[in-house]
Length: 333
Image (cartoon, rainbow, N blue to C red; front, side, top):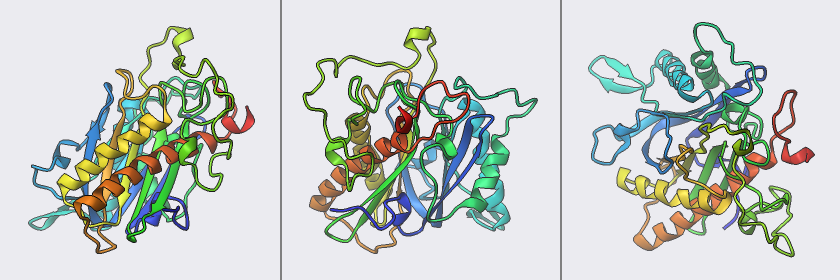
């Protein structure tokens, strides 16, 4: 297995990604556009999720495919972003056909970045609907990571968080990719070091090539919890998309989302806490034309976990310092 040519989720055929952000706000929106619409599912394991249109993604429900997935900052205010994306897609004639009408299907998830040093005095209406509209026109195969889109104002316990992505080409010709906005309550790095928990899965020095620390720090298991010293119980959340060009059913996509959560556990300590809304959307574009056997799916699930772990580390690694930051960026620490 090796990374795809871009080492981004857009190595999966049929996907583009757009980012929009507001640096003064320290927040933003990312969209994954599916053309054609892709089979989709979701798995939520965090205790504090904020979502839109996730019930329809369950395998027993009617709608099989989605037009886009939105990841947004802004906590509950950020759910407005999906309305902006839906409006842009409607103007393009995209959506689920209901008689003469078309309804774009745009599930979404949000992360909590309201306490990050940005100016949240936005007046009557938050800016996320406009950001969600703008990301559609910005969608391309190549896109920025780190301090970009939904990762613009993200924080972890030790460093700035960010938007991360990675891809893997499997020996059977199937591609899998991940996109993640890392805003975890816990830490992506080991103890007091700059070494990433995801180090065993790193490809081609994509997040610093530091490997595992030697000797392994005695305090590595000590919990580092965001804002604990400030007595603030803010919500956090790592929100992600795992995608493949394999032909999958909704039930198989659900299983892929479950497998991808193992990447959270490999890359973040701790993860899936009561104050994280950790979730993974799964997309299957089917553009490879390849179906998977049960044995193939074991490999696909393992690749989903390792690719997600790499994307999480890249999100933290790629973050850039900015005025008013509450935590240092990994690059400048």
